[in-house]
Image (cartoon, rainbow, N blue to C red; front, side, top):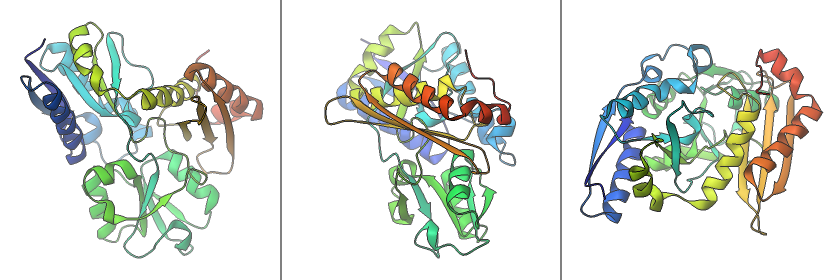
Length: 310
């Protein structure tokens, strides 16, 4: 059994909370294990004046952490699962997915209780093409503006009056003890989340079976299955930050899963919706993806300039 491990983490307050949470869970299960953190700044944290879709996507938040594992400086990395690329580099595994927090999007504002209370022309901040498309579809009278930076930075920009409201993942806001800032939670019927939203994923080197064994007690079976289905939808469509794609699965009463997905044009003028129920994540995702293609998904992929995997 390992006696010491090192967790690579981004240095934002939320990322550090996530890493400390994993550290405390490991130390609770293994009282003799020493767990250290290696804080790092990623390219995604450094470039804040451009949207993720223009600078390389979610992989910018994980590459430096992967390099630390390859060099032996770290044994594992903790990620918000929605920020993890759908296909990992050779030699890496997403070995553990922990129990999910609230997967919904949250509306935060100092002046308005919910999105539908915003007046025409009000500015809504979001860094997500998915959220922007869903908002534009429901509220074409609102103005969408880019919102980058860590959670504290985004809240500061709201408080400075740059936005009438902003949309954030509820999970991160709650994890930092800022739930009182949430004015309303957006129902799944109105806005599906990104694949994996609300869940923590732990990445390791594929060869590190010793670390995988150590992490096994942290894995949550239901969240693992649901997020596998969600990520399979995104992977099949070539999902990235350039694609307004949402996918969310929940366990059904019969022990299977209920999966929904939305694929949009960035301006929200066209949103395709599909759903399916079944037992196996990959086959369930395939059903949903096939339905999206039958509805015209290829035209959206063509408009986005995205070549889906064959």
